[in-house]
Structure formats: structure tokens, C-alpha cells
Image 1 (cartoon, rainbow, N blue to C red):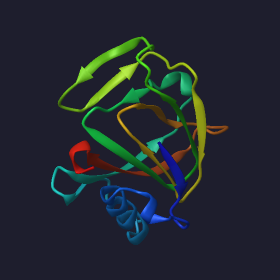
Image 2 (image 1 turned 90 degrees about the vertical axis):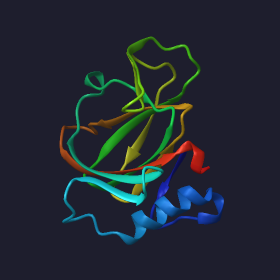
Image 3 (image 1 turned 135 degrees about the vertical axis):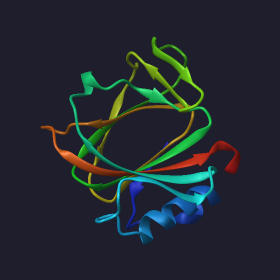
Image 4 (image 1 turned 90 degrees about the horizontal axis):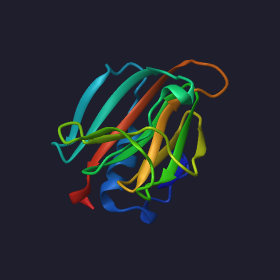
Amino acid sequence: MFFGHISKVNKKAYPMAIQTALDYLASTDFTNMETGRYLIKGDLIYVQVLDLETKDKSDILPEVHRQYIDVQYLHSGKERIGVAPDLGNNPIAKDYDTERDILFYADMQNEIELIMRPGNFAVFFPEDIHRPASMDGQSEKIRKIVVKIAVSEL
């Protein structure tokens, strides 16, 4: 997992595919962009623009992906993202869905929280469980951008 702010990125520290994602995030104005999916490199690197409402963390199942890396970027609002290493010791709530590339856990052990503010990004690998869109204080609307990178691009 990586965590940072888009205004202060040492791109050389990241693999090329993640550099591509960070370049896209830094150079795109998401304010008026329609929600939806946008292609950067076909299905190998693509973007999801999401408008969400944060929820209590107890209402959000932790998730992992096996085929894609998530670069999650907060454009507006504030959120908390729970994160922990996937050590294979968490009860599964929903089995792996190959079409959506997602597995949901009922909970996660040793969870820590990232406090996200506009401009923050976090990179989650297949070994990183994450619980996105948790509220920070109270529920609010957020605009979140998720760049999905196929593991094969690393």
C-alpha cells in the first residue's frame, strides 16, 4: 500500500503503471466530469469517477481485488479508509466475484484508518484489504476517482 498527496509525488518511487495513474489524476479536472468509466489503456488501466455518500464503517464490508490494483483518489469531501494486510484470517462475507474482481470480508483484523482529504491518494494491491468511503465524523457526499490497474501491468 502507498499513501500520499497528489501535489507532492516522487513519481520515480512508483512503478510505471502507477506513475501513469498519478499523472492522469494530477492533470485532470474532475469537478464537472460525468460519473462513469474512462479508458486510459483499455481494460488494463481505466478510471472510475464515483459520487458516493460516506457511511458508518460498520455498514461497509472490507474488500480485496485479485486482478487489479486500486489507486483511490479523493477529489472532494472527506473520508476514512480502513486498511489491513490480507493474511487469510478474516471471515468471508461474499465469495470472490471474478467478473467484478472483488471479494468481501465480514470484517478485518488489525485495521488501521487512512484519513483522506481532497488530493490524497492510496494505492491498494491484491494483498491489501480496504474499507473505502467510511465517514469521518458524519456522513457526507464525496467525489472519488479510482484508477484500476491490471496486475499484469506491473
